Image (cartoon, rainbow, N blue to C red):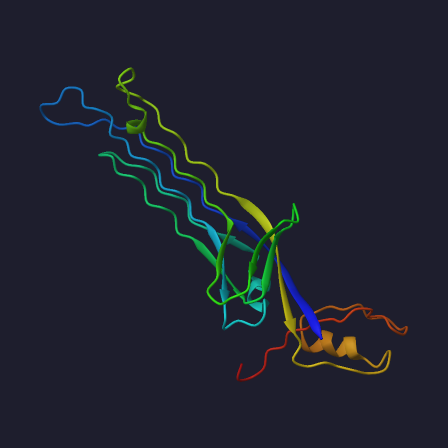
Length: 206
């Protein structure tokens, strides 16, 4: 029988770094040209299918994933470093949706497959980028763009390894609630649990 293991997580991509306002300076150069570098792009939030994982148990205790922002541009036409990506490792067969829109962002079917679920912001341009024949000394630069921020619904379709079968009100849901973290509906009338409930149980040796 197929079951669905699911959880939610908030992801925040890195902001782009701001551009730099700078001018070349040397001993015998009165008015040097602009040499402010561009800011680095913000890091992405990336989902990666890991063939060694079988559940979303690790993500249940991880409520937020943030990528690093891009670094500020520097003088001498030096661009800022790109922010580090934040990688979310999920089992093969995982679907990822945007909670706000319901859009399917990723369907990871093979080990090692990756998908960007929140894109980092673009780095701002430094003042060297804006120099022209009519504006030789721009005293401004762009700020970095903000990274995407989303709440994701992560869903794993999988086959249950163990099933519990019994008469109504035999205590099946109560047993699952005691040995796992799942919280099915439990009451004193027959057929309280109307749909199959998946509980994830860790055991010695894996």
